[in-house]
Image (cartoon, rainbow, N blue to C red; front, side, top):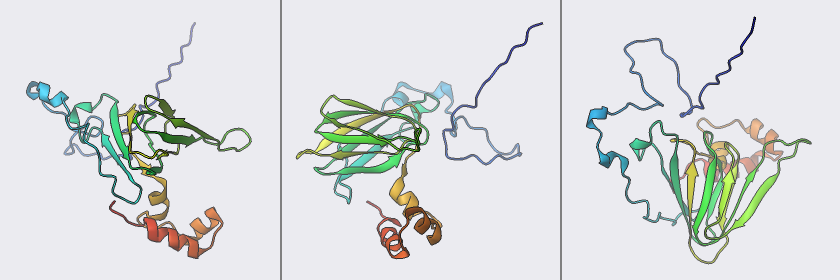
Length: 213
């Protein structure tokens, strides 16, 4: 007699959460999106234009990250891929953030960037920074869900292209998530976490509770 063990993990989520409902009146979606009738799909559905247009870097960070994901390019639904373009002013920084649903491959198209990511807890409870200076044509890989950044260390504008292994990789900005959540994280949690007083916490909240740029 032989025994076989089969293991099939759930697919990675393509949205932050999905509250289950037991109601047949609710519609079924694929990867969180309704699907267009295939008889009405045309070649134009598979074309996206304007990716070459630079973003507006006139903001506090000096960067303009623009995602070309399933929300901007519906043809990506169920394909598990997407792209992002980031324009950098001199000194511009793509601040600490992570993508919960995809690894990322950054290619520098113009300029010089310093890029890095921080590992999870390695043996010895170490969070190690892996980083590199990137020139035109260089590629840097960032594993899924790890905190990372890029900064333009050149004297001219820079442009980077990011390829993702998800139609909707998501993005969580660490600064805004920690200091600008709704509702706010309680003061005693933040003062205990960062080992600083409430004055410093309030000063950081004033920067990141809300901003449009």
